[in-house]
Image (cartoon, rainbow, N blue to C red):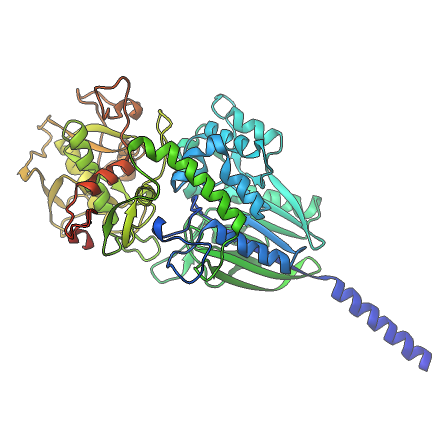
Length: 586
């Protein structure tokens, strides 16, 4: 009897030990849409990562590095660090990446295991993206880059260098990483919407997301025998009018079987709680390194038994990592010398101030901000000053990346408002271009603008300057604009008026003007023209020359327009710093 009890007890102990050994912990630290915010979100002059409790800025890579280091010290074998895309493009630091390769190498030094590409990694085109990656790995290790649904052109050579990086496994379709005896399969995709706003990715294209993820999930689970499949998805989701989340990543979770976790990006949404669709956990941190996501999983027998998710705000209570901060400071000095001093500017010298914060349009809250009007007015001021006077300037919410925050304003603060793109002269920022349309087409464009204003916060929301309109909101769709005025004079908006009117904006934005016919289902047709009325086939031929006394095309940039416009404003308190006027509060 005693012998049987002893055997039974021994079996129970063995079963208990087996059960305990089958239970494993995994901590996923994740970011998305960091947009090169190495020095935090807030006025540059306020960021003090190496002291605590003395500023209101949040974010910054030095603080992020501290959190990574602390987590890895506590869970050395079970911490996975990943990013869901758009880690580049958003600050002046991006301008030097193709030669310095600074940020991706820094991310590896901080502890990132794997990262995926977002639409903004392609802002400079696939050739320059390949140069950025090559520069990053020249003298340092880099995180594993995952691009699962990237498709290279069979007819164009413009993506050949990027394709070479795919063939030599610098970029992989998927990767397998082991943490705490767990075999983790990691996939990374660019979503449908992200694909749609990545015109410079061509000739690169992206395969269907759900089909790609299901194929690779099956392969990882059935052939590679991984324990978990984690998707780094630059697709996103958003709250609808009822506050319920919907969007691409939720559809992926609904359709794809055996997918365990989606680390989401692209839509800049912060999930206070993890979302679960079927058996898939979905999380996102917002943007600009304001938060770090921490997802802790308890896994038993290749299944997630339970999980805990939290967003950790990177505030001034976190002391930054000294080594990372020192590296960034040194790089900042190089950036100052190369990109600001040629314009008579300084990284740290204030050029203006504001006693209130001007906000961008909110995609999440569906609210219009005030920065867009300031940007449109600045472009008008800048073009009129340096070139022939323009009738209308426009700027879309989707290309305005940051608030203008209360306090003293520096050149890098204004650069971050409109940081996207690069010009033929390799200076940062999309160049400003100009095209022409008829009075009837101008009326149609204003109809589209009125329509975009019905959905504040959307990327397509258009801010404008130089034109006034009379609107009757009781009229039907695309029939609301009754009169159009330029310099307070009504213009003829009938078909018989063949006079051309000029529009200035970034070359990126003007590429979309010709697509209005498709957007309005053929109800409005706009044919972009040059000053002689010829249809435009290449917007790059419409780049404005901002200094005709110098050989070649001297490109104008929106960030430079913001600086010049700010400097032109009144210094009301006589402290040597012009102030943003009260009118932009509204």
